[in-house]
Image 1: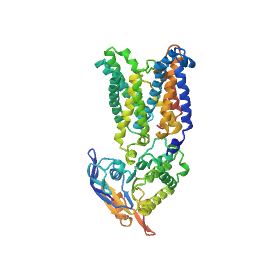
Image 2: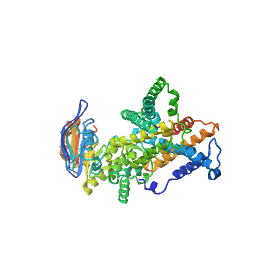
Image 3: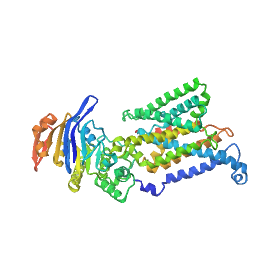
Image 4: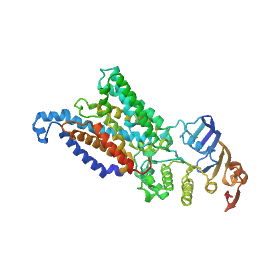
Length: 325
Length: 252
């Protein structure tokens, strides 16, 4: 079924790789401090800027972008609905709740502990969402995302309430609006755990494709459905909790990227996963670069840029997509 | 052999199956018939371990379905449910290829490719192999799903109303293909049918269910009588024998 995809990369994959490489170069050399390429080689200060700030920022955008796109894809697979993603189905909000609670109760906790707590709450929040989503009638595909939005909204309201009570509202925006400007060396490395999740997703790609056909088909083909569901939940939760804690929430990536790739290449994840990951990285890195340039030398957070760009792309997807979910 | 022993099933307080015992020996086609809501699909999904057993025992080739690892059972038994909906954008060839998943866990050998080609050919899907499932008609989609179950290559094949959406030509083709693998390869087919004459012509044995019980069981020539049919479906119909095969005239 996928030998062709394995033997030669698709033209779409090659194009995505090329665009990504260009964006990475751009990202390394766009910023408040003007830094032409040749100075890096001769100037120690410039090299340090590159290693401490520009490179970590670029890597963080790549890891977050690919992670969120894959997280969205897996979420859609598990919910069997192409209109859900972690930031609209309570996962990101649950992660915020976790990181808020740990900040309140254990202010000295480091980033690692915060990430673990956020992952745990994200796991619980997503499990509740999925259990409910699987009970909704499959004949009404829009009920699932609607429920997700309401559910995420309720958790988000709880987060706001707690933050307001504790006078932490300003602090909250660090997690609710994604921003790479705070990313420095030593502050983003946990995101590599999200990259590890991408590897896991790649390893179980065939199983995920089958799971998208539903529980009965999965069991019929010898898949341990409940175990794979748990593994998928862990992948989604780790990715979205880490990106919420370290970068802050970035909307729409998990929604638009998998949908576009599905339109172009289908849903055989063995072939599409790498393209989804690369496209997510392109979208997030591109929006970050845009945010750095729009009102240079000031910055607009990537979450805000993505809110606009992603919203437009999503509307375009909805209008041109034939009527089925 | 599929052995069903004293199986009962309830959904909440509604009884679905009452104390069913049934042996289906290896080889041949067994047709399950009966009115809507008789419990045919429930029995099939219990045999295929898609639902947990509540009371009783079911085993296939001696392997109990509730305790044998799923991945092992997937090499012995394949099931096609009547309400299979594939919303994924997969190409026909990819879908049929996933039927081979239990054997190589995703890695397709030359042998697998050959089996996939053969399944595609058998259901006249070769020309459609590169098309996305969602672009097919209902009947073509149904054929792709049956081809996928075929490609799984198991000794036991459970099909729940596979003739849904198929035109006369492909309904006949499917039944003939089933006959061929039953006779040629010794496969065991259990099939839920609503067209009583398909059952009469192609099945070796007919098991009739009503209200969660087996009420008749035997070869078509014994079972397809006006009296038995009246007991099953609740109205009288004529049975004529043509070329030694009982044909039920149920339209008037």
